[in-house]
Amino acid sequence: MKTPAKPHMSDVQIEYNHLYKEFDDIYHDAALNASLSDSAFDILYGIFELGDGCLQRDICRTSCIPKQTINSAIRKMEANGWIELKPGKGRSMQIFLTDTGRQIQQEKIYPVIQAENNALSVLSPEEWDQLILFHQKYAAALRSEFMKLHRKELQ
Image (cartoon, rainbow, N blue to C red; front, side):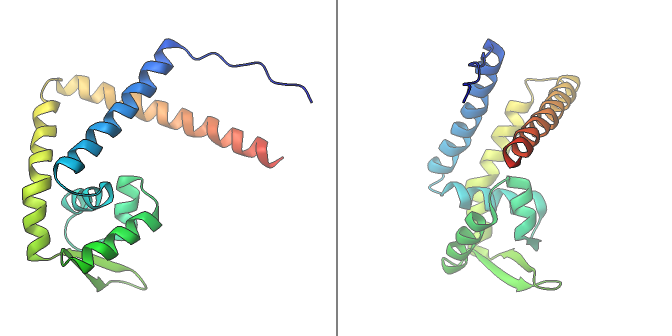
């Protein structure tokens, strides 16, 4: 079997991957500093973004975290009295913060969102538009390339 040639990693690729991991570390540290697991942090953040009564699948979609991970964290948060689950349409369950959950969200998530807003202010609206556009373009291209790899593996 012929061994494929070793690919080259550009400096841009290395720097982008480093920045991606740095963002991940920044949010992990934010969760730790708030004394929350990454999953609980993401769920409380997701409920802030989506609103009370959102669905587990919506949190999975916005956080890009697997359903099983979110489900486990939701069960722990429910046991701790932070959230309540109420039947929605079909088999879906809506997630609502309890008074305790709202207090935790205000104490732990609100300051993070304010810090994000402060950090966002270093770029102009036009720079943010470009940054978002470039990330969307790169994500679409990367997804397409990974799908090609997957199809090739299935052959």
